[in-house]
Image (cartoon, rainbow, N blue to C red; front, side, top):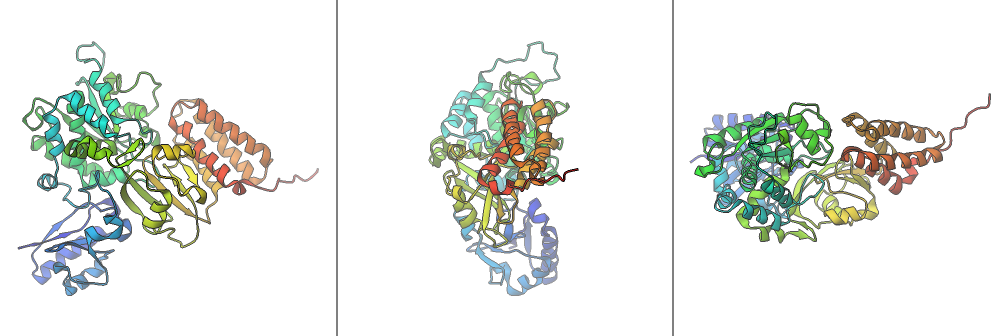
Length: 529
C-alpha cells in the first residue's frame, strides 16, 4: 500500500523550493523502491515552515519543515515515511501550536485536501452546503446567510445577506430592452483582486480549496436567481488563475455547473477572469467596468450594483472570503456560525501576518482576539528581534497602530472606534527602525500611482500630498506644511469618489497622530542674499 506524502503547491511554498523538494522526494522514493503517492496540497498557512512536508501515518499526518531538496535523502534515511523522528520533525501537523489554536471554518480544508480532487473535497464535507441550499427556497437561503451575521470580508463589512436580498428582489431584466451584451438576467461576481499589502488569503483559497469558492458562488446564484458568475483574479496570481480554470472545468464535467446544477432546475455558469493589474479595480464598480472590457474607473453610486451592476443587470458582488464562508454556513447552520465572534462581528476572520514578524502566515480566528495576541503570541514578535513599533492593519490604506493600541480587539467596531479598519484582515509589522513619515509619504504616493483619475481630490490631492510631506521632511516650513497636509487629508476624505482617495488620509493621519516625532524637522534656514 502506497504512503501518501504531501508537498504544498501553494505559490508561497513554490517560492521557497517546494517543486524541487517534491521532485527530490519522487526521485529518492524511486531509488529506494518505496511506494508513495505524492499529493500537492495547499499550504496550512504556517509560512515560516514552508516547504512543509507531511506524511500519512497510522497516528495522523506527521509534518517536517522547513525542508530543502538537500534534506530529502536524510528524511528517507531517518524513516520519515513511517513518521520517524528527524531534526526537522514538527510532530503531528494538526498539533502544531499555531495551527491547533485556530478556529478554521472558511479554511477548514485548505492544506488538508488535494485542491483538484472533487472526491477529496466531498470526503471532507464539500457540497453539503449546496445540497442543503438546493432543497430550500431562494429566500430561505438568503435569510440563512443574513442570520449568520456574515459581513463583507473585503473591508467595508456590509452584511452579505442584505446584498443578496436586494439582488433576489431586483426586477428580472430579461426583456427590458437594454442595449447590452448581457446574456443573463443576474450575475454573481467574486472580487478576488487581492491587492492589499500583507494579504494572501484569497490566493490560498483558490490554490488550496478552489471548489469551496465555486460552491459558494453557486449557492449565491441559487439564492438570488443569478445564472452566471465571474471570478475576477488579480493579475499577479497566475497559479491561482490556472487552478481556478482547471477546477471550473472539472466542476462543469461533474455537473456542478451548467444548465442544471446537480440535476436541479437551477442553472449556473462560471468563468475565471484575470484582472487588469490596477489596485483601484478592487473597488467593486471599477472591477465591473474592467470585467466589461472598459478602463477600470469608479462609477458614481447610485445606482448600486445590486440593482444595476455588470452589463446593467442586478449583480451580487462579494469578496472571495465572503463567498468562501457560505458553504460552511449552509452546511452547519447560521446559528453555528454566529456562535463565533463578538458584538456585530460574527464568525471568523482569516488574519494574515506579514512584514517584520517572526512567524508570518494566515491564521483563522473568531473575531475578538487582540492585535497583541495575534502579533506577539501567534506571530512571535518581530523577526529582527528589535522592539515592535507599529502594526498597520487593513492594507496600504489602513492605520498604523502604536504600542498603546495593541490591546484593541480585532473586530469591525472596535477598530473603527480607534480610527482604524480591518480591511481584508492583513497586518504588517514594523520594528523600531521604521520611519513613519516615510510610510505616510508612501500612502500618498501609492494613492497617486493607483488613482483611476476620475475625481480631482484623489488624482491631484494625493500628488500634492507627496510634495507636502517631502517639504516637511526637508524642513521647509514644517509647521505650515503639517497644517496643509491635514487640510489635504480633509479634502481627500470628504471629496473623493471612492475609498481609494477617501481612505488615504487614514494611514497619514495615524502616522502623524501616533508618531509625531517622525514629522518634526528643524526649519530649513535660507541664507540671506
